Amino acid sequence: MTPSIRFAGTSERLRAVLTYPAIYQIGAELDQRSLIGRPRLHPPYVLLIFASLARITRSTVRTETDLAVPGAWDQIREQMLATIAEHRLDVPAPPTTPPAWHHWRRLRDEHLCDDAALAQIRRLHLPLALDLAHDLGLLRTDGPGSLTHPDRTRAVYGDGTIVRPIYAPPRAVRLDQPTGTTLWYPDRTGRLRERPSQRYDPDIAEHHGHSGPVHGHGYVAFHARGPHVYQRVVLTIDHIDRPGQEANTAVRLVGELRAAAGDGIQVVVYDGALRGTHIDKIQTRDGYVVLAKQPEYTDAAQAPAAVRTDQGRRAPSLPLGLATHTTAAGPCSHTLAAVKGRVSLLDLDDAGDPVVVATLTRGAVKRSRRKDGTHHFNVGYRIPCPAGDFTTWLSPHPTGPGDPRPEQLRILADDDPDAMVIRGIRSDAESNHAQFKRTLITERAMSLGWRRGLIDYYAFAWYSNALTHHRANELAAVEQRRHGRAGG
Image (cartoon, rainbow, N blue to C red; front, side, top):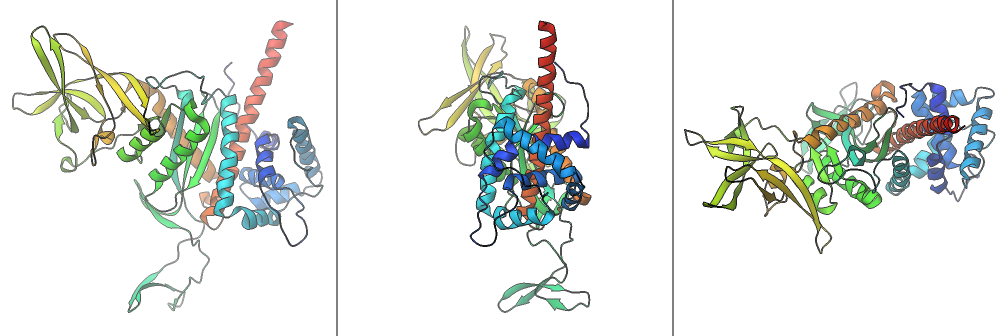
């Protein structure tokens, strides 16, 4: 059944968060033991729900104010108790006193803002997000598609983003001294100080992208998505540890997805940040087909040998050698090259320059497992020949150090029919980043430091997945009632 497009209001979003069992389960596993001081009033799951609700109101202070309205917490607590009972969750009952901003801040700053706790959150979140994806029919090992024709329901897609800080970067002056170059910060009077006089985010870095340099915190997120509205599942998120490391962060997260989802994934979709070395690592290590945007070369001198396409334009190419087959007249050879990620058939024009005469049709994709556990791909291509068409097999892996083949020869080129069905899903990753930023004040990081910012992003992921979970249950109930009426 195709669900009707009905956008969720605030009350429905609130109910979705309160009825999402994964938040309770994650909170139950978080260790917030304190050896001194009085015991915590609120269990961790209550404060994680508080952080998720703050993404709806765009403010933790606003959330605290809303929960303090007479009768509001009583209704919320009743819904939480119902969720605990329905899913038989092993968590303590929520207290009769609503949580406040300082309760959440204490849990976040004292227990969640270190690398071990953040890694634990990521480990706890991923399997629960996969369970939600499986409930939607996504990333299932018994799902449709194959490596030759990957299915959209078995695609994971990701993107990187930069979240700018709410405080402007401090102005700095570099001074060369005998001991080396040091940074000094001028105050309003012009006097140089060792530390900035205004508030600032010490973790910000200068990241460079297609729009130029941006100061902020970098994050990479991966998702799966069903065909309907409110069917995005945020699978995993992590911080880009330093500028220029987006692709390496994405490759590392794909490895974690492989460990959790296995062959439920067939294809990884990303933008042009994944280059040949990253693509080959994912295909070799994880055994997934990678669909990434082919880079555009503006300077022919920086590209491999250029050929003229059938549109008359010059394009970079990578020679792939000769494909030879036996005919009645003897051996017959065809010159192959990778042009814009596609395997093409070359010939010489009247001037003796190479020209593309045909773009080959991709056939089957085969994957084998080596003794060392790595994967090896071979792709079949149909070559037209007057003496009889035949199939040749090519590997997208490098043949030696420095070989650009993974960059130039893509299993799924940009104009591949299967790629054209799947690749549009990647823009939804940008949409997820944009929606997260809209839950922040002026779309700027509301918390100092990338660790707090990452926790804010996970709070948004719980809220987003909660809405997905809620809508899935709502549609299942409608379908069950419809079958009940039909059976009656």
